[in-house]
Length: 252
Image 1 (tube, helix red, strand yellow):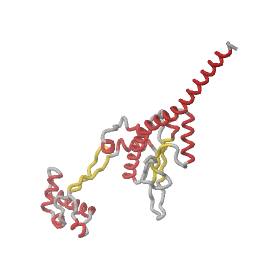
Image 2: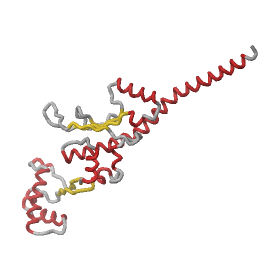
Image 3: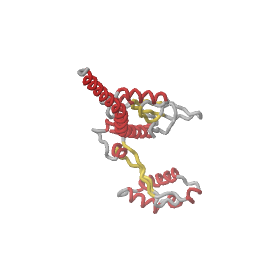
């Protein structure tokens, strides 16, 4: 009897310690999972936003989105980014008289063509100074000081302000913490609204499994199950190929 009592006490102590460990883990494991998830999703969201920026520019220049990431990366590395430099603006009086931005630009372009036929100019500043002073249509419409020039910039520098270059831009198609997996990208360039208007759509996705697979398996299963039951996408995504949503992210 004297021998079994210490053994029983020892066994109960061990059991209590094990139970305490399990209790602590039951609390800390979900917290650690959610903390790590939140940290990782900052990077995943950043890449999705950068990918969206690229797709929107591709659509702007080509009229469609692309699901081919090699095509998108080649576009970013090689295509120029056109940007309009603006100087001056139309007054309310000019707008009320029917002068619009496109009409004003057309008048300026015609004036520049005529001026260049008659002579050469040191630079665009000299050209504009000449037409503002001498072109009848420009003066008639009060466009002295009004200027619009389309210039070509480096695509990567323009879109990402030096954050990426040709050697690092490939990163935007890769899901962080996924061991090199790419975002799932789909496009629907033939979507039409109820009014019959074609609205190209795209969608880029990063499922939870892609960037959380090395964390607690049960917590990941619980997360996916919870989001699925709520009819939410089980992961992060931008855009929607079934309905226009202004290319919004599901975290926004």
